[in-house]
Length: 225
Image (cartoon, rainbow, N blue to C red; front, side, top):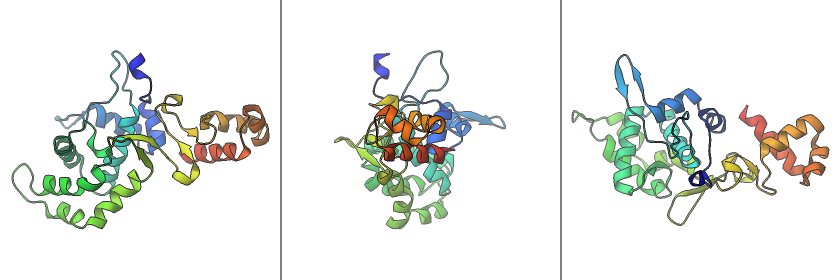
C-alpha cells in the first residue's frame, strides 16, 4: 500500500466528475472494449494496478485523459490518438507522454508524423490540416497544460482544475489527490458540504479557514455538478 501514497487515487466516476468526461468512456479507454466483434485495446495501462479491484486511476492518468479528450473533441479518432500515444511514447521516452511538459513543444511534430499516412499508406489530409499550423495545435493543447505545474523532469506535479485564479489544487501528495483549497489545503468537498449544512460563516469558524476559501470551495464543487 505504501506505493499508493502520493500518486492520487480516483475511481472512473471521480475522475469523470473532475474532468467532465463520461466515466464509461474513461473505463473503455483504460480497459479496452469491443464493438461489433472488433476488439479495441486500452489506450494505455493505468498507472495504478490493484489486484481484485475495479479500475483505479492515478493523478497521471487524469492528466493524460485531459489531453486525449481534447484531441477527441478536436475531431481526432480514438485510433489516431492511440497511434499518437504509441509514437510519442517512443520519441519522448515517457510512459504517459501526452501530459509531459515537452509534449507542448514536440507534440505537433509527433502528431503530424503519425497522421501523414494510415496503416495502408493513405494520406489523411484532413488531419494534416488540423495540425498544420502551430496556432491550431496550441489551441488544443495549451489551455489543457496551462493549468498544470511540472516537475524538473517535465512530469505533471499539480493541477488547477478551475484555473489558477480560483486557487483550487489537485495535488497527488495531499488528500490522496482530491481537490483542496490552495490557501488552507482543506478538501473542497468537506468545506462545501459543511457550508451546505451550516452556512459559510459557521464553516469558516469550524475549520479555521477564511470565508473566501469556503466560497471558492462551494463554487468549485457546484461547477462539477
